[in-house]
Image (cartoon, rainbow, N blue to C red):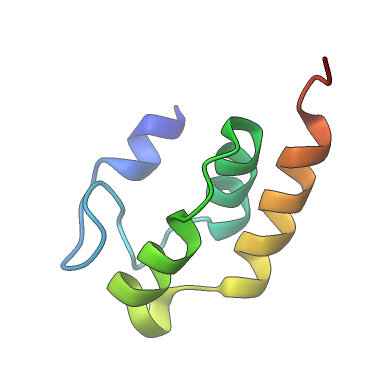
Length: 69
């Protein structure tokens, strides 16, 4: 299901539909994968469509859900 959110494509970030993306959810998924560096790629590629606050909150929540060794 998450892949469906990402496959639409946009003029910016490959694999991300900049307009209409659920930035919290994408941040959550990136946080759970500890995919650092994606935030700036989205911000640069998606410009005004990127909601940094929602993405950061999702990323933070995703990191907190990661299993700790």
